[in-house]
Length: 431
Image 1 (tube, rainbow, N blue to C red):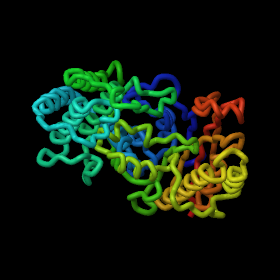
Image 2: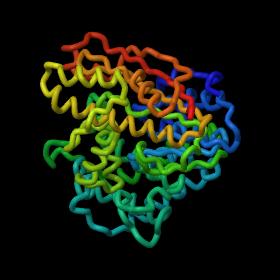
Image 3: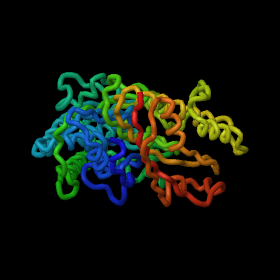
């Protein structure tokens, strides 16, 4: 199987189209890359296609459209909602706008008072935050549980949300993003918070409801969004789970396609903080989620031990980070990288566990730098995979002229060029 795979440049180029444009996401690979790759694998009808870092759901969207059974997992519930929304059926097209109108009607009749600790009030006044909460309540009551409301952040059955429900939650995410545009920083993955309450926005109820309706209409507009480009015919299951503890049977996956978070200190929890606020995350629950995500910019209280089986390349890089003479290299940055590699190694072990003996795993990874020290992540992943009985059988490297590292002006003290190499690594399970 692995020798016949068609590997194209995974990078998303230009403006995203179709369902992938519903929620622009910095991480991940293009729909066309995944589609050509999976088609070339020649999978049987009963083959399971899996992504353990499913993100915005490209793997599950493509695999489902091609008629395969597919499983997608992500620890960030925001991305689970986005991925589920991309699976909404063509048959539901005519019901989406009427549902939006019904949600607005229900929200208009909601007389609940603002929540004291609503995280949405970081960016908007109590009334505006309450109007968003009313829309969220109406979505849940119509499409998940009409008898009992509970914040999605604490609701045990939130993974049961349907594609239609996810679509409408995504429209609400887009509504909040639209309203918070003034808080987007030069780094597009970071949303600023005003320094004092006076800097918060105070949109009217009418404006909020109009923006929500407009987002739904934009998403169902086939000319604008290409909504029904590909009809989904395969069974898909997307749920919240950590990549180092996947809820799937041993040796059950035929083909895994994923892109683990790169070691670039992009904080994906912070990047989705407004959406997490919509889901009812408090500062405390947000902090816990942030600490648990692979690639987090936080550091653990208890420092992981360095493991020999992480491979020579990884150990050499860690030693160079620890010995670097820049500030906090041997403390914060060293611990942060230790945490990343520990999580990555465990996650690769999980991929090995769930892959069939003849299964194939394709990982898209990118190198990076700490100061002037190269973090050769493709090589590190290859060495870690070997420790888990995954043999590299095919690869391709694609050089990109510019990366997000150039956004930070301090990096210019160590490097003048900011190119990066994104690699597609194909592994075969040999045990």
